[in-house]
Length: 123
Image (cartoon, rainbow, N blue to C red; front, side):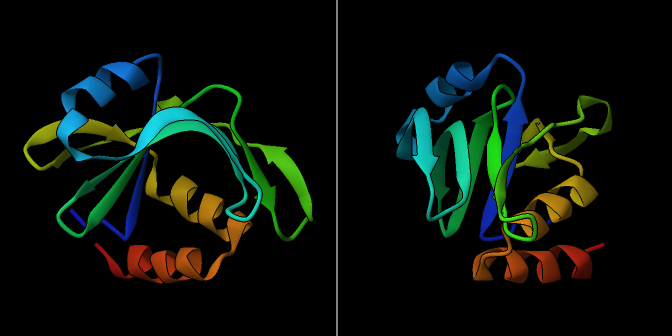
């Protein structure tokens, strides 16, 4: 499985359980972040495993800044389209690839555009 610079996981009601499992790799603690420069308003935790950043976010009350609309919009995660993948030996739910691409298109930061290219190039 391809892991881009940042991999996003949105989990129903188990964010803090996941944090406890990966406590040794936390690079940003689990809390509510409003990061206007990054374009998001979300509860998440960031892990760093080797060179890979993994961000695990709550599925409730997520807002992103849509650069094409120039406004904050609610991000809906469609859990019926979750894709399960093995990441470092653990089977976890990931946001569907096309949903992740659309999310990154809306943010349109340089890192997101790079990630979109990498996601499209992956099988």
